[in-house]
Length: 108
Image (tube, rainbow, N blue to C red):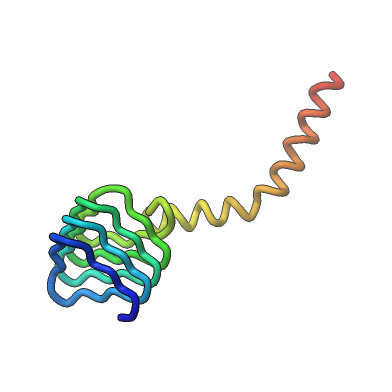
């Protein structure tokens, strides 16, 4: 795709798809059948297994075994990242409740 940068000494497997603004740093090995969505950035000297999917703006920090699907920066498995996203939406209410409990404890 457009704006994909693959650095020196990289090995990209067969049937891989790399979308816009993906960057793969030097000496990285990517297995067969991988999919890297837009704005994925892979640091140097990593080994990415076969059939790995890196969602948009993903930034893996270590080697990735076969069949993983990751999202986020730093990259986490989709299920774990979904739980984090869900918890973030509840943070403002949780902070209000925590402050109320702290005030109540201070008065006692």
